[in-house]
Image 1 (spheres, one colour):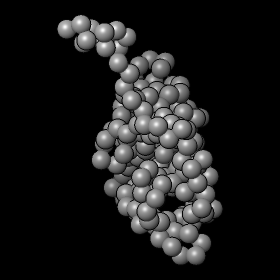
Image 2 (cartoon, helix red, strand yellow):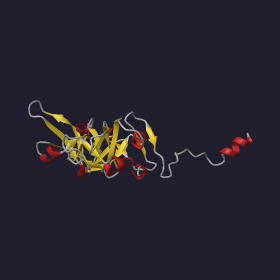
Image 3 (tube, helix red, strand yellow):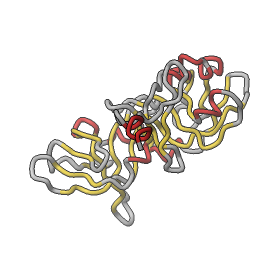
Image 4 (tube, helix red, strand yellow):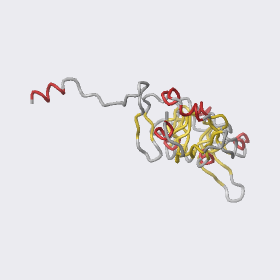
Length: 209
């Protein structure tokens, strides 16, 4: 599980010739916030502004250090790729309020969480308005979302499902980076904290010394 901001600023290279195609400025999401649809490279033009982008089908790897594409001639723009008009940018959903159907404020979207297949699996929260499991994890997984808010609405969640232990357990021992850039190891399914194992023999060596 990764946080969207991890991609920002990453260089983009073609695997065919090693050419750098640009730098990730933002990511595109579908209107239902289910999957990463592409990468935003920035805008061009003074009067007729167009957005340069790379569609998801041309992305090979969303790496930790760089993004790799299947060719070097795959950068397109919003003028010839009209589908982008129905997409959302990551920055469009940051700051969205998360509430229950009854109006209880749960928190505020700070970022998206995505998996290895570029599917959106949840939201990292920049602010939390409730106590309990959500306050501890600072995230809401996608399975608890009943309405993603469309283009500019409020995200609605099932609070009971969001706080359900099994929902939080799906994070497992995944390491994610929070909004402050700190890495966090989540508890495993037994609720035990992950610990760094001592090297074999270290205890014997310490006792002998």
